[in-house]
Length: 561
Image 1 (tube, rainbow, N blue to C red):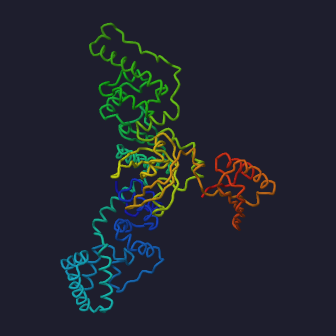
Image 2 (image 1 turned 90 degrees about the vertical axis):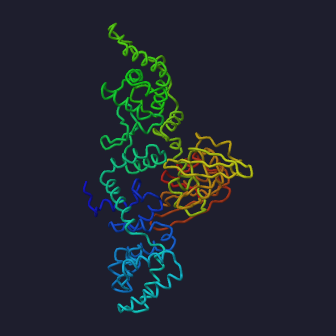
């Protein structure tokens, strides 16, 4: 595959921050930088790799670079000779090679001497720097450059050399970044299938890829005993979940399943499966995982039914295979008849059980999510999600809804218990810390199958966000724990005296402690905010919000702060 080095689709993909799976460009901080920079040629990607480091990020160099690229800061060169060296970085000294080129061009340094200058600037040893400054100024003077400008340029070199990155290294990384971005831009389904297969043993990565596919409109089909391959595959521009992504299902078992399917056609039911596969490899534990993941839903029976029939199916398969191995079926001219299920009317597992088994077998929920029924609720009570927490300011207060994916309790040096939890919402996961005082209050509700409401502070270290929990409660109980304000936004042209009177009449039935602010808007013109009297304070709930919308208009927007 020949990849053109100036492909518009690649730069469009990068500029909108669609970098999931792209080498070196996936982190949220890098994604933010890319969307600000909006690269439009390969040299910008080289610069991105060099810029995304603590030195440039903390020095103001990044902002200067971006402003110069987009014309907000003029690009000027102290000497005309600098333009050919610094043009691709908009006049900013970004690479170590640029320091060496400037020394060579302005002060006639040899490449060896220029490398010594680069090292001296990196170490910032005063004695060496003084010697190099004297040599640089002398060389620049010999080339008829004004001493004042030579001094200014040397100081700039010294300032940026401490942050300078090796361009050859950056270019090597950038090339792989560009190539992977090209594949995602032109072959998005195939690219994401490859990402899934590569990260199939890393649940967090698989979940991230899954969310990326959903946001991109790429359908990910569940595992299927009759269609899935070992790895994730592409079928009709959809991604089919690979059998290797199911826990406890090894490659030997998968090989047996696929070989049996290829030679004998699709499996008809659980008895047919157990009759045809190698049961030493496709054992009870493997089949249980296949059932729990939903991979055997194609066989026409409920998951609970197949789990109930599993023992007898394995017994039937083992007996049939044993008879075949000794030629008994040929001797007597018949085979064991395939048994029927002993309990055809068995109820399917409830939704919560199905989802919990899916998570147990593939690491996440496949057919639904415990939070789906809370989506409207979450839109009212939360102000961030797991994937956007790191865009908040350090120590800012956030509210999230989700479930506990995993929990680890520890004992502090003072003998007190605390916990670290992996908290999951519809978009991803984030680490949360429960210090002893908070842990003691909420330890009784820390069960993995409960939907939770969390209030805490964002703690950002090295571009990674975690939440220091201040409060936690069951999501169903969030209204009683919420102490903010209720904001009701209505179009003034759609509200009359009668509707306001209706609102006045229903609020006392939901009396609570949260003040209400009524926003009367005239779209495109003005907005008036009216604080209601404290006698109308309410306890927030979905019920009262629905009542409000019924009375003053379904287009009414209600939110909490």
